[in-house]
Length: 290
Image (cartoon, rainbow, N blue to C red; front, side, top):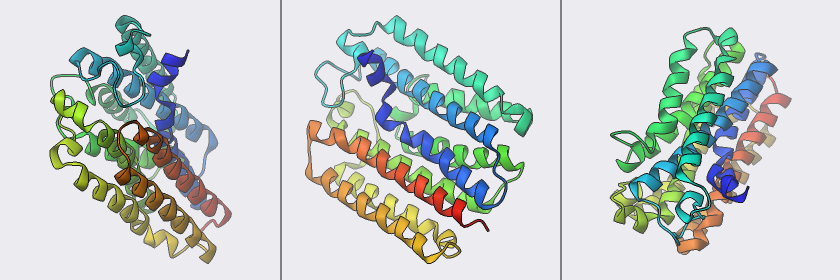
């Protein structure tokens, strides 16, 4: 099972979980929380991300982007632990399961959610596949901001409340920026391999120095972007952004002073920081409803 667990990239799952948890917190804060659609969103988000991770490994292998002995975590299909056919089949099976779960949200949000689900399904594959894979053309960061920030937070809120919220929008941007940082760590580590494979990530385009600065700024901007929320929460809630910024700054310092395989733990650390922030924000909102 280890190669499949690696392919699912469990350390990155906080990226999808954090957005749903944050949206649940906003809904509870505004007295619009509904448990069942929130849980369905959580399951859907995890399945969609696992699908994207499987697809990324499969299509990077097909394009020759991954090679044996890579700096990053072991790739089962590249090393021969998983057959390409098995990974392809499991990718589409997971996608089908995600779509089935997503359809369970129609009674809560209406049939117009179907195009949204289709867009998410297409993104899960288009990130690495198709005639214009987003991750190969410097668009991966934008895609993560949209599909791991704006989409999960706002739509998780919507299927609970039946309406939109300006506060959910603010949170979605913050969560999206934190999610982009997870991708930045991955691409920061893989810059040489990506350059050799003609995979033009933003790190390849702008270099590690700019990427390191972007990582730091994204975390700080995410926190300050939520200023309207901090101002209406109790004073003790200011400990949440302060704690996050301390963890974020420590992780950034390690990012710019490490190389190669030593960067691998920072992928999980960035996701951990993001998840802790989302959970604490949700807790603060639940304890102090508007």
